[in-house]
Length: 434
Ligand code: EPU
Image (cartoon, rainbow, N blue to C red; front, side, top):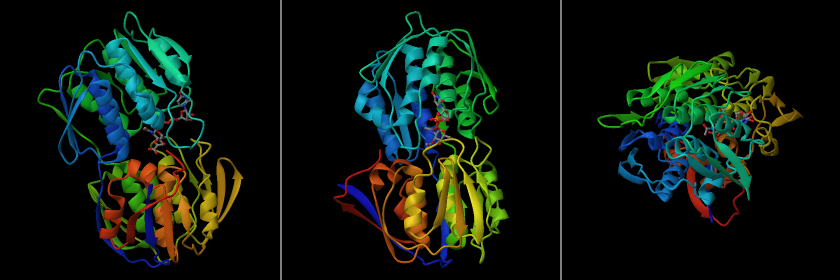
């Protein structure tokens, strides 16, 4: 049985209003949870989003022997023992790509780790070669058998210098964390510069790490000791993808929507694209106010590593562009499988032509019609929710628990509060993606 969302569309009306509170960021909360392995005592994590990926990551650590307590909504205390089991539980790790960030801290602290080839959203081939190369550079031996990698560093990890051929966020974070416990100095060049990495590094530094340059393309880490969480806590930064998704929804369908507890600085590329399309956006320190325009202008979008247009907001933005008057080109440069959902949008009435696996041409304005949808991944799932809200008639979105619920907290509740007609039901539909 899967969860289903039933949405009654607004048929293009701009009438959503009220405010939406942004949650803590999934893509740093998961890494902060992994970082607890680097601590000799317990760590307090706050503003953690209550989403399925977080539950799975905590479950992984629990199964490996960590103690996790949930003190109140969004607050957890994690304590990792001296004798943590170093095998990542296969079933959970296989289903969640982010589990791979645990490998760095576990290997660095305990000298070994085993993990399955990770799964996650079906958005491209998603190799792990950079992880394997990095472990080897730091002195570990890697073997692969029965879909499982075994990594051993008999005399511990030692600092190394890397140049990442791709600016991967999780590779950067994995080695930044591994380096905290490794002997000597590690230099990561062509590192990813996403704000989640900076946030994580600042927290680790507060607890004794020596990380310099996070947020730039060269990060230097002096390693060698475990951290302490005594008297400290980590407050998860706001989720820029959660905020950006509501911003795009507001740009399509809001009389006036206030997006609160967010960091507008992290969304410059999105705000700029929406403003070029004619959207009225006001920015305060931790709040964005958006009103949908009567007419949307076309804009071309090219996804890019931060601070460029985020790939995780490409699908919601494509939905937005179906309502623009004219032609827009969407160029997905990060993942080759991240435009497959456009077929379903076309079935709703959008005019979208696939130019090649990385580019689609969107012609608007199209009237979208509600229909039955199955989300291929987490971010496209939210894009389907937005499309359903804008459409005429009713849409039924399946696979919500294996896609949307992984990354967005209480999505139906928050949408209902701003005027969306949305209900959650259980259905017998088979799940498609994990
Ligand atoms: N790559 C390699 N070799 C590797 C690993 C990655 O070549 O060993 C390449 C990939 O092929 C891709 C690029 O590096 O071209 C980045 O891919 P990767 O899978 O490493 O992305 P990531 O850094 O793990 C994070 C987020 C993604 C987000 C991307 C881009 C997490 C857990 N995931 O992925 O988030 O799309 O950065 O910003 O932080 C999501 O939240 O839905 C999501 C997919």
